[in-house]
Length: 221
Ligand SMILES: C[S@@+](CC[C@H](N)C(=O)[O-])C[C@H]1O[C@@H](n2cnc3c(N)ncnc32)[C@H](O)[C@@H]1O
Image (cartoon, rainbow, N blue to C red):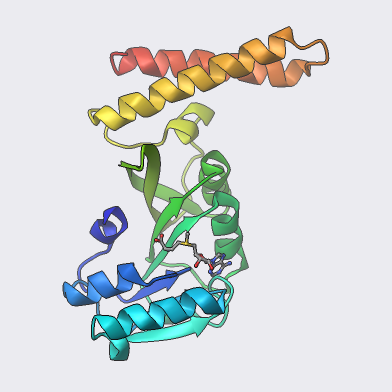
């Protein structure tokens, strides 16, 4: 639902890694997107699940199913909005980099399961920026949902990339930053205690811990 809320009204959409296709089905049923929606998946099994869902909810004629890797076989003129959700951050970045799209004015909605710092950094290095972000909790875990646009912007600081730019008043943001403080503190202590610790890595852990503590102070932790 967090991804769906970021989809602009009337969008033309590609859902990469659609799996059960719940997102396209919901968006079509709620009149939020233009049809057809392109729903792709690299695996036959999930794509069959997507076909079944579409049939079950009576929207099978509104979805074009593609068995493909990422955005392979698609071009930028097909859609103005791309969702890539529920995959590792590195896979998401690889999919964007491997695409042959000329990105211009598109909206990307990304929901990484891991390697969020690497994805965030990679986006800025590859001519994208994070316009806004939301945090959601699912099954006890906090996830980040990003609204990304093509365009050159200055690289945010490391702590900004780690913490993201969600609403600072959101209690989940405080919890997320608090988790980062603990993580960097553990990292720093672990490295300081290790005889084989790399000096540069220890300095990095120290500076991240310090930056996270400062951010924590700013948001009243
Ligand atoms: C955990 S599911 C996420 C489903 C849905 N997007 C969601 O967020 O609820 C991940 C799906 O991505 C597909 N996938 C993984 N790598 C992919 C790639 N490179 N291109 C297309 N689909 C991929 C998998 O087959 C799987 O169906």
